Structures are given as C-alpha cells and as structure tokens.
Length: 319
Image (cartoon, rainbow, N blue to C red; front, side):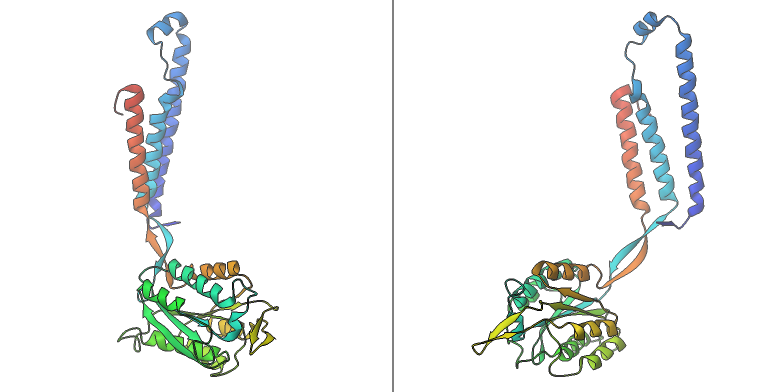
C-alpha cells in the first residue's frame, strides 16, 4: 500500500500524544484513589466500578482517529481491473485421441467441464469465443458476452467435429486470431486486448506450421496459453484397433514461449480445472493503483459508532 499524501501521516503523532496524555491522566487518577484511605466509605459512595470498560470508549475513539488519519493520507492499493473490450478465445482439440480415458471420464469431456468453469471465472463483460480443431480449425462461437451461447457451444464439442483426422495446432491459433480481429468494426485497426487458450494432447500433425502462427500471434501482441492434457499411457480404439496416444506437449510449450503465454500440463481432471483457474485469474486484466481512502473512512465511522454506543450503554452519556 502506498500513499498519495504520505506527509499527512505525521498527524498520527498527535494521536499518539493523545494516547500518552490519556495514560498519564489515568495514572494520576489511580494515585488519587489510593490517597482516599477510607475504603468502606469509598465503596458506599461509588459501589459500582466500571473497571476495564471505562477504557473502551477512549480506545475506540483513538483507533477511529488513527484510521481517519490513514484515510486522510489517501492510501492506494494495486487493483486488478478488467480490460475494456477484453477478449479470450478458447481453442479445444477435438481429434480422436481426445477420446482417451486416461483423464476421467475422457480427455474431451474433462476439457469441456473445465472450460465451463473457466468461463465462469471471467468477468461478465469479457468477450469469449470458442474454436474447435482437429485436422482443421473452425470458430464454433464468435467472441460474445452471452455466456449461455458459449456454454451451448462448449457442450456441442464432440470428437471429430472439426473435420479430418489430425491435430492442427497452427490452424487453431490462426482461427483464434481471426476471431479476435472480427470482434467489432474497429478490431482490425484497433485490436482489443486479447488472449488465446489452446488445449490439446498432441503435437501438430497437419495444417499451418504452429511456429508461424505463434509468430503472428506475438506480432499481434496476443499471448497464447497452452495446456497439454493427458498422460503417457493414453490409448484409443480406432477401426477396431487399440492405439497408443501418449500426450506430447513440446509443440504447445514452444507456442507459449514464443507468444509470451504460459504452458501447463494436466494429467487429471482436477489438474485441468486448476490450470483453467490459474489462467482465469490472470487473463485480461490491468493492474492499477486505486485510491482506497473510502475503506478507512468507513472503518472510522464504524469505530465512531462503537465509541458512542459503548459510552451510552455503560456510562449513559455521549462522548
């Protein structure tokens, strides 16, 4: 926390002086009480001693002053603010290998469930689009703020729904970039702040070179976060034959490094959800210093109310 008017914090010295004066006054009062040696008479004159309660209003009052001084110094704190027109594209691999059950219930089903949770993490004002890819790539849902439309699109993702067999990571990146550029009429000239999240289980086998697509994304200042989902033991049945489909994340790692994104590995459904949560907490935000004086003013008002209530309840007077 920093202060826009840090010099005003010197007023805390006045609060400290008041505290010292209060302690000195209480010490003098205790000495005077000891001089009054007729204790039975003192009990009859003042049979009810407020004890420690008598210090509560004064303590609350001094705390109120200290908090208000801090607020007067205009404290600021780093706050994450959603970027205007922020756009996130989620690209999901729907090739046959995503049917492997090494991630329960299978890779694609786990990816769909995690994508739903990821979308829920993003602010409602974010534009979110959906790309499906296998042998080629296509935009399933153009960037929208309508979460119901997006959820319907996620639920429609099925194995082989993106054309021919294969894994076209480069095409997925290109389709994501095109989706960002088509956000609105000004997107081509004034691109929105954007990020892409690519989820796959294998290396690129067809279509555009992922390194080329990653270079284009880097030039457009669009980081690509990548997630490899699966384990070395994955397998699927294709044409009656069981085939091994071990996860291969090297291409995804290279894409993330080239674009300034992050690379994650998810071998279980839980890890996959955690990955999406981690990405969702950092995507599409600016960190700004915001004035938080109102918080301290609010706390000061509560302390003022507490001071008044304690004084009225225990001593039947308003301080």
